[in-house]
Image (tube, rainbow, N blue to C red; front, top):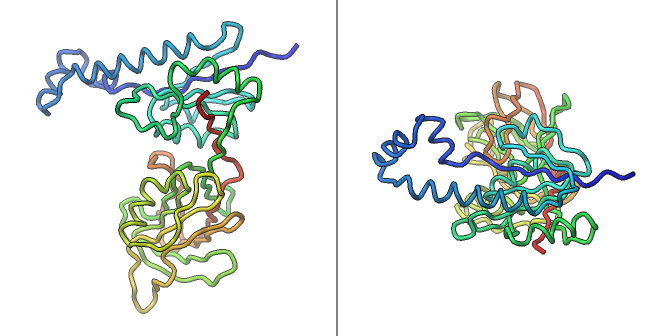
Length: 299
C-alpha cells in the first residue's frame, strides 16, 4: 500500500518571538522597541498574521496525509525525503534558505504578508494552498524550475545556493586567486571577492553590481540555466590583472578559481554561517547546479 504524501511546512521564528526570547517579557520588548521609535503593536500584528497563515496551511493539509514542520534554524539538520511536498510559509528569502537543502522536491511558497512582501518566490495565497497541494500530489501542478548555483571544491566539498554565491575574504579585504572560464586562459587577480548569481539572484546583489558598472551583459532568466558573475573591485598591479571581471556562464560552462590567499570563504544567499573555508592552493569550480528549485505556481 502506497504511503500518503508528506507535507513539510518550513517557517521561521517571527520578530516578536525573537524579541520575547531576547528580552523575556512583552513589556521589556515594548520598551526596547520604543527606544528605537517602533511600536510593539506593529510587530505583534505581523506575528499574528504569520500564525494565522501557519494555522490555515495546517488545516489545508488533508487529515490522511503525513506532515512535518521545520524552523529555519533547523534546516541543516532536517532530513527531507525525496517525495516530500515542501510548503514554505513566509517571505521570499525563506524559500532561498530552504532551497539549498532540497533535491528537486516541489516547493509551495505561501505569502503570509501579501501587503508588504513582493511574493516572487512565495506566489501562493493562503486560500490557494489546499487545491495546490492536491495538484502537486496528482502531478498536475505548474512547476517553474529555477536555476541554482553550485560551488564544488576539488576535495569534494559542495555548496548550493538559489540567488548567488560569494567567494572572497570574510572581511571583504583583498583576496588573491587565479580565475578562468571554461576554455579560456586564467588571470591572477586581487579583488574584494567574486559574485556569481542566477536569474533569481539577478534581482538582488548581482543586479546591484550589474547596475553600478553599467554592464552590457544580459541578465539571465530564472530558468534558462545561465549565471552572471562579477569580480568586485579588481586591483591592477604589476602581477594582477583586471581583464576578466564579468561574464555570462552558459549551461555546462564553469568559473574556475585557484586560491592564493589563506582563509577565503564561499557562502550562498548571504548565509555566512554556512560556509566553506579555502586555503592556499585549493581550487573551486562554480557553475549551474544539476538540481533546480521546483517552485510551484499558484493554483
